[in-house]
Length: 73
Image (cartoon, rainbow, N blue to C red; front, side):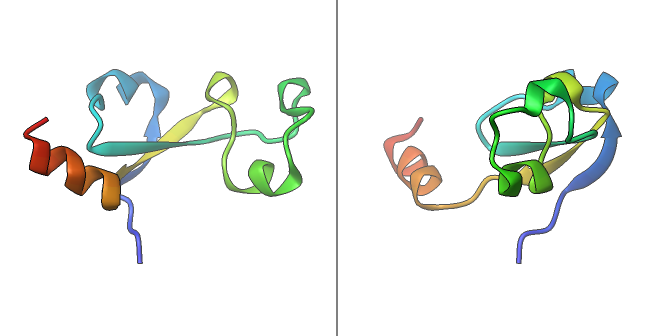
């Protein structure tokens, strides 16, 4: 189960979260003109960065992160 490290952070805090070890998920309105062309499933789970009001921070895990760690990157 994946749990957010932080959630519902305002977009003004976005600049503090940089780096490949975090995954950022944007939250906000999902039915705007910019969303036209996105699948309904994609619109249900996230919004576009341009429309975001808040965001959540998740620790990135998975196979590719393990490879980066082994290479020393």
